[in-house]
Image (cartoon, rainbow, N blue to C red; front, side, top):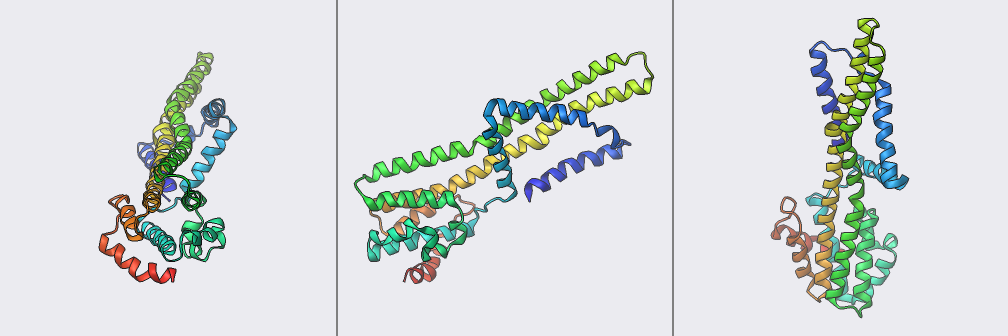
Length: 289
């Protein structure tokens, strides 16, 4: 997993270099410094975002541990599903879609795409938008506007954990300085004592600064960026669905809707036209038969 692998590389590199210079692990194990810095950061998150913000961060970390892969295979599977839906509507009418979007979990069509079916956010957006098209009475322009607003609202909410982690990361050096200042206060109280005791207290104070900087630039800010990238990847995926449904609401042919959707796939994952056409010829028509 990138999250765990990255952390191991960061911490492993630092400790390896430190030990190569003759350092020892013992002076770095200042539990009090962890309590000061970690507790202050946690309290700040609660003040600014409540316990709901803490829960959103935990959910974001879980998402980083089990990321959804939006690679070319995932986009091809999405195009296949979209074509199956649109082709079914062409052959049997849009009302034939109701039984599938009302109960996606029980739909034999959706069951063919388990990775999509398991993504409740994708299914909810897809079915809710398609339902508006089927019911009618709303112009295609208005449907497109509502879908775009839906995506913007969802993206804004999904960016909350990233924003919280970014703020925590930016504040970590400050908390490290606070911990160091407290260590200096303790050190000043020990002036006149044995030199080795004063040296130990100074080292403990410096560990606070070290931890603050490390956790800012080696842990929290990279985690915030990872979450932000995940949200962007999901948004690219959702925009492909949006573009296909927008074309369908305007009455475009199924293959035209798929071509519009294909053009909205990020270039690094976008399949060639011939590859998409071959896939739909081999699976799409047979799947809806």
